[in-house]
Image 1: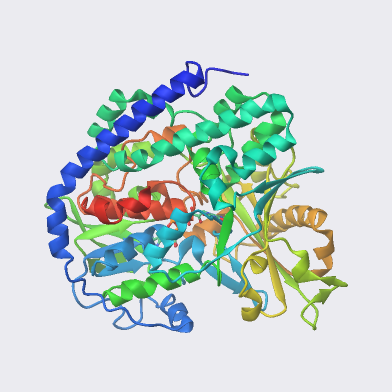
Image 2 (image 1 turned 45 degrees about the horizontal axis):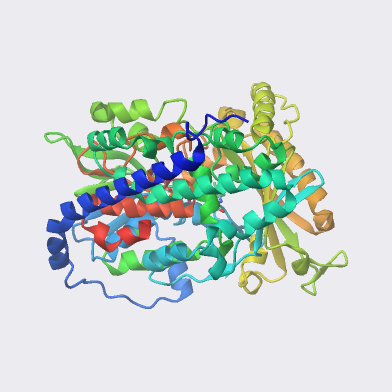
Length: 627
Ligand SMILES: Cc1cc2nc3c(=O)[nH]c(=O)nc-3n(C[C@H](O)[C@H](O)[C@H](O)COP(=O)(O)OP(=O)(O)OC[C@H]3O[C@@H](n4cnc5c(N)ncnc54)[C@H](O)[C@@H]3O)c2cc1C
């Protein structure tokens, strides 16, 4: 056991002292922030005394239609002057847009894909199967529901997943991860279900390690609101604060592996505690413990799924933007930012050769894409530090994802297939399958072997995936079978590498040639084998299979080198003082997952932070969503 991680002095006293110093620091900073914004509150109240938004009623088909309005549609761009342009319509872009629109601001959201929603979009294929893309579950916490209530104006309903929302599988070992659904107990985090379950599973000598792990999780969580606020301040102030409160910083400088090694030698316990790395794409030896802690906290009360599927979220936000005089347009790829040369200020964007102007442009497409692709070379000198920062090897994301979409057909009577009642045989749980409990070694093995593969035109068999995630969206959504009778679907996701498909990145989508098709077939075969091994009774029901790779993510989601989770969630990332919504370019702001963390809620919080950065007085109105 390595004791030099996380806290260099014995944890019991040092961490308590650290926590109280940090809490005092948090209180001091929040007080300063409150005083600093006091003068702005009056301004804000005056400005928003009479919000001018008249909300209308839309049917669900009207809402769905609004998510497909093309850039070329006549009169689609509002004729009155815009207050903001937002690039990208994922959770980051839409959450900022919703906050602004609810104050009566005229916002134009531009989306390169043919549907609104980013990772929340769903699509139909295979003759009536609907698939979700990047939202399979969300933490069932009260504050999460509150955030969605605010940004959708209470238009999204949620359904609980099985209390054992995740099942972790290594060989014959199966471990259920259960949320604490009893609200009385979830107020007492020491007694949470997962802690009780783990203690039931491991001998007494491991109990202290389990307690210590979750104690560290809680410590990080105490400081996360402070992190969210401090990271909005100018770099120089952030650095000064960090010098004053080194303990605060220490909580963000350790990898998950360092913390796990400091609490236990038990490989299986470490493997169970860190299975969740798949949700942010950094194996324990690289991933930040802060991110790991965020996720354990996020799912502490279990998991939920939106009724009607993830696309109901964008469908609920787009009307809010429209009713405030704005618009959300698809097939609108922003190719560059427009500058007022005399002032080095962003004044608009260019889409398909057309110039659109607004005093402020907000990008949700990730820091790398924004600075490398949208800032013209003539103005790169303004973002030199950022351009250097995003290329640091400790912040470049290493893992992409491949997603396989499976359509499962029930027989004519809508129920039986091969003698099985399909619907009742599907779990409302996510399955996480690993070759061994050592996640970093699993990845290393894959990484080493897939490199040789990517250079070979004959596509030799891919190494076994280091992790596989299986979920059944149709069973999580109670409306699925009304909308898609006699259909069930599964998604199977596994980490992959951009370099495996890099040579196909510039080929035309759906026409990438036989070599790419063969590569896709080998991914499919490997994942289908694992899927059928775990759910053998579904083999006969498989009716449709398709698979997207890292280059598919780049095409449909506008990602950078397949990095679906944005910048790498390493300790290095959490220390970057430049990584904040305000950029060195006047008139340019960032929102979305790079502004907080991966995950729908991470991107939403990124959206809230962006709105506050635009006008600090919003700390009073929407700041509560950060806590
Ligand atoms: C396979 C997968 C599964 C996931 N599962 C979950 C889950 O179960 N739960 C969870 O909480 N999170 C999950 N995530 C993570 C989550 O989806 C993301 O972290 C989150 O959606 C990111 O939101 P965003 O707004 O920052 O980015 P995005 O959703 O990626 O939005 C960015 C948008 O910008 C658009 N865009 C890009 N370039 C341009 C341009 N030049 N012009 C105009 N538009 C542009 C893109 O098309 C995209 O719509 C998953 C992600 C993936 C990929």
